[in-house]
Amino acid sequence: MKRWHTAALLAALAGAGAWAMWPGPRRTALRKPFYGRNYAHRGLFGPDQCPPENSLPALADAARCGYGIELDVQFTSDRRLVVFHDDTLDRMTEGHGLVCKTPWAQVKTLHLAGSGQHPPLFAEVLRAVAQADPATPLIVEIKSRRAFSNAYLAALCSVTLAQLKTYPGPYCIESFDPRVVQIIRRMAPGVLRGQLADSYAAWRKEGVHPAPAWLLSHCCGNWAARPDFIAWCARPRNAAIRLCAAAGAMTVVWTALPHHDTARLERQNDAVIFQWYTPRPRYK
Image (cartoon, rainbow, N blue to C red):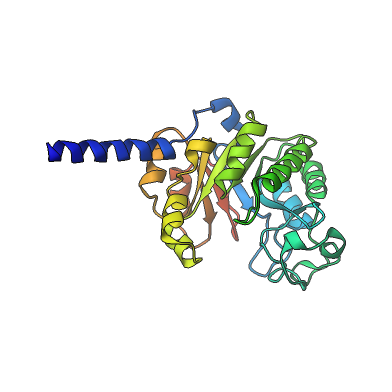
């Protein structure tokens, strides 16, 4: 009897885990514009940051070359929507501190990697990419922090969606934060949405506690977000990512680099986010 109870408990736990990790239903028509393409990570830029990542020239160049684009958006302190990857200004500009704590009037005066380019507003990027190629598919990552409230994230998602409505090409939204993906599910059910995921080891290296690191790396927020695609790092897939792929989720890999087996990554994934090399724009 005890063995039966143990087996039943393990089966129930496995079922609950699978339910938590399960992606949304396959939506083939929504996937089509994004399928089988290479996406320039933060635009076309090199290790020398010339032109700088997430700058107007790097993003417009990617569109002119026929690539899709993956980029990052977040609020400044006065809630202007800016295209910028890092939480802080320190790496890419002469400024210091959190982007979300810095007003736009200050951010726009800063230089990206010592160039003449400044961090652009999302609206500026959408216009520049549309002028280069209005059919360019965009993967928009909404940046989040643990300290952000649900109300703050809802405002961030709302402004992002409102600005995307001005863009003539296809777009989808992704985030590492399952709360963001869930909000997009509620606000814009007709928009393709994706869950970004990193490995357990990577989360632990960043100082995340073992329990949330495991939950995040195994997409355990999918029960609320039910994403259309999983964007996984360029490492071997864990059991949860394999389960999502088997369940029909679109698979995206980030970030493919020149030293990776890029041909294998293209074979294994429905879309590839790349950096520092120039693959063919379409591979399927």
